[in-house]
Image (tube, rainbow over all chains, first blue to last red; front, side, top):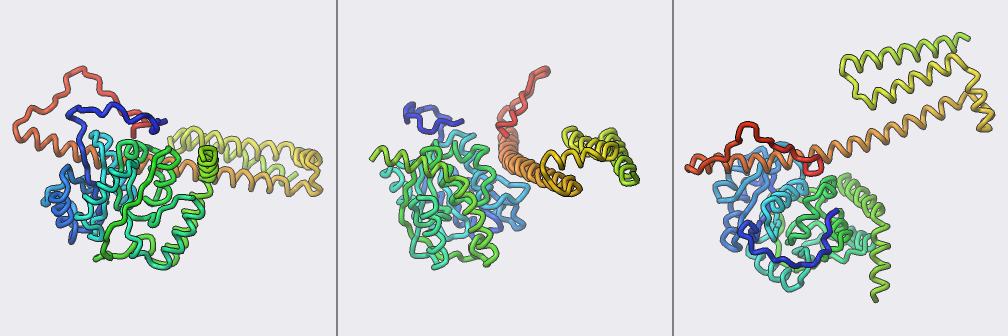
Length: 251
Length: 138
C-alpha cells in the first residue's frame, strides 16, 4: 500500500534525484520519432526515453540516433503498457517529474513548457494537455457519457500528453496499474482513488499525420472500448460514492 | 445397474489418468486435486446411485436425475471463472516481466558501454548472495 497523501516534505537534494524524464511510447513511428526526440531535447531539458513497443521498423535506431535513451520491449504491450514502462523507469531512477507525449507528431514539443508551467501553478499531481477542438462528435458524446459515469471532469480522457509528479509515478508504476488496457479512465480513476489531483491544461495539437486513433478506428473497436470502460467504471462505483461523500462533508 | 458400472469405470479411469499426468509432470498440483475430486465424485455416483435420489429429496427437486447436470454445470462455470482469474494474474505478471526485461536490457547495454569506455565494471564477488526480486517487485 502506498501512502500518496503523505506530506510533501523532504524535498531531497540528493544528486541521484533527477528532475525530468520525458517518456515517448512509440510503435512503428520511425518517420516521426527522431524529429520529436530532437525537438523535445531542444525545448525541455532532462532525459528523453523512447519506449519502443515491439516495432517492426527502425523506430529504436532512429530514436537512439536522435539522442534518446531507448527501452525495447520484446512483446507489444500497447500504448499504456509502454507508457507504464517509462514510469517504472522513472521510479527506478528517482525522477521527480515524468512527462509523456505521443511519437506520431500530434503533440507539439513546443507546447511542453506551457504544459509544465500550467502543471506547476496548479500544484496538482497530474496535468493533462487537452485540445478540445480536435474532438469528433463521437468522442464528445463518449466523453460526456464517461464524465457522467465517473464524475471526473476532464475534457479529453485519452490525451497522452501528460505530466506526472513523484506520487503519481509511484501509483502508476505499481502492479495495480498493470492490467489496465488503455491509459485513460482506468488510470485517472486509480489516481483519484489514491487521492491525487488532476489538472487540465489547454494546448494546441495537430491531427495525426500517420495512422488513426487506435481506439476510435472502427465501430466494433468503439463498442468494445465503451463496454470495457463502462465495466471498469461500474467496478469503481464504491470509490465514487465515497469520494462524493467526502466532498459532501467538506462542503 | 449398467449405468452405475459405466459411471464407476469412468471415475476410476479419470482418477488413473490424472495420477499418470501428475507422474509425467504434465499437470500442476492444485489442478490435479480438482480433477481427482471430479473422478471421486463420478466413482461415488457409480457406487451409490441412490445418493442422487437422496440429494434430490433433500433439495426438493422433483426430478433428481437433473441434479448431477445442474451441479456439474455450476462447477464448470466456477472452474471457468477461476481460469479467467488465473489468466488475468498471468497476464499481469507477463506484462510486468516484459517491462522489466526492457528496463534491465537498457541498463545492461548502458553498463557495457560504460565498461568499454574504461570504467571499472561492477564485479560479483565469489560467495556473494544476490537477492532475487520479490514477486511484488516484478
